[in-house]
Image (cartoon, rainbow, N blue to C red; front, side):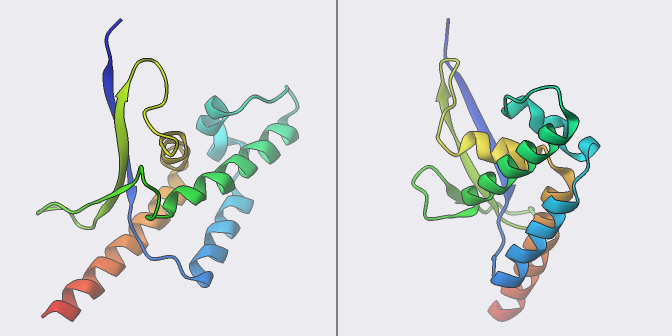
Length: 133
């Protein structure tokens, strides 16, 4: 069996207390349908309410991956991209390439969360661009 290179990206944006609270509100409002892809990253029973509760908790834990001080996370800025991304990844022999990779994948599995991060990343990038001119 050979190794594969796996990577995952999420929008890079600043997170103040107001934004963190908004992310918590988004997670609290997520329905069973919103969380379906997160179920792949957790082990839960058959009870629908338990699945939702555990999935929401897993998403909240995944938000710790937004810490750019983490050794396995890098900032990716490329010409032509609307905003920068946080990047994690590496070689995998059937395991996770980094400790933050599963968290990035959970965030990517939540469209509403990902879209909010992208919205803020675009806003932050435009402010950064204006301050450079």
